[in-house]
Length: 424
Image (tube, rainbow, N blue to C red; front, side):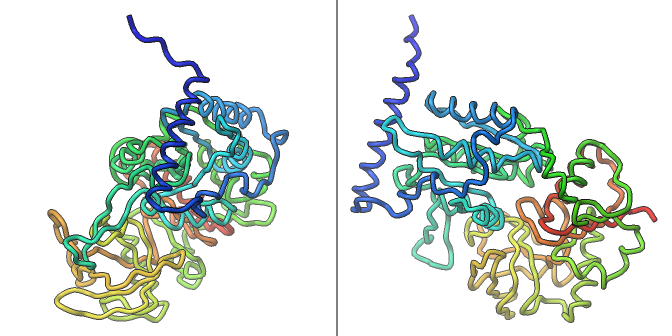
């Protein structure tokens, strides 16, 4: 006869015991009474709305999060929400009211795949860091500090009781597996309307437990949200200005050749790599850079994950120092949130006009390309104040994928969006 399932009270008691054991191991490891970062409770989040402000869809998700936690949070919970539906507002109300069995507040950390996405969370007043910095230690290989690898931390060294993973559709399956192996409750959050992940199989946002779909009326005052919502719903967006402040505009294709117009934006997003390469060449020259190799002040994007150097595909750096040495480029760069990377070794193939090298096994060299214009997949997880989208023909793509592409591109803009139509 099968053993009876534990009751909710038994699950809470067991979770409390596991928490106490984890705390004891952590204290022994660090020989401290209280970790400064561990004392940061989610109750310190910047609340903008209250429980009474939640709509019926948010309320259902609120109750779902609390029920999941009270039942033991043994399996990850997935929450999906379109732009403007109030995901962050919901979490700012739901998470501070979570309590442990002993009445203490739950220690929560927000995480994301990219440093730029983590900075977006911090700007909203949330305790946040990248998934890599949260769950991995960077360990030198064979005592050589120039070669490192990521080693999964023991759960007892992670001083949080709930990990919220934002932009969860970007997380590769291998990292999701590592996250789940820790045994710390996980809440995956993302936007089911966006493109699937850059690499790996499966989009975790395809099967959410709770889904926010109702865009709030006040959110539609934003032209960016209005246009994104129309695209997602299959509504034609005509040329003109959108939003109470005109923060989104769609213009004709004649602007696609106007570098003065395009260069005013923080990022240019296009569909094809051919257009991306052409735009990068043109924008480099427009900004006063020359020569085939990058120069100080130029924008570059990493094109390959590398566990040895610690770089991730999609990381954008600005060059602060660079030189040729030993058949490669030695470069220092600073990312979009201010982190500095020293002594990066970069293949020259792309800058010399050749295909990227085929890499088998481990390497200390990284692959970079110019980053003034990007394809939409490379932009996932990042946002810029001002974005210019150059619409192109998407041959071979389904209607659903075309909408996802444009929706993802539009929602990369924070303050100003320009959509250059492929029509006149």
